[in-house]
Image 1 (tube, rainbow, N blue to C red):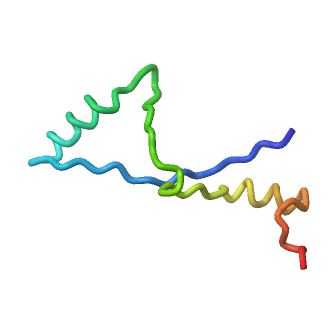
Image 2 (image 1 turned 135 degrees about the vertical axis):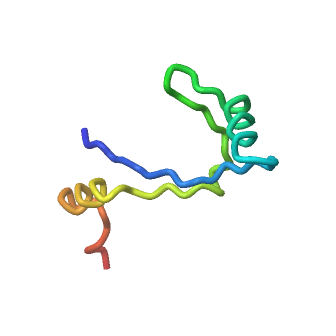
Length: 69
């Protein structure tokens, strides 16, 4: 079994009068629960990018498709 890692890229925006207010709002909307924060985002608006280690492993295992013609 191989490990595949992805960097997930998305932005969470808040309208607020100050940074501190935005942080308080973010904390109340997305509270930390045992070291985890849960977000629900539209998949088509989120970028999933393989990490450098995953790309390296895919090359090693010849899974990357680079040699496909």
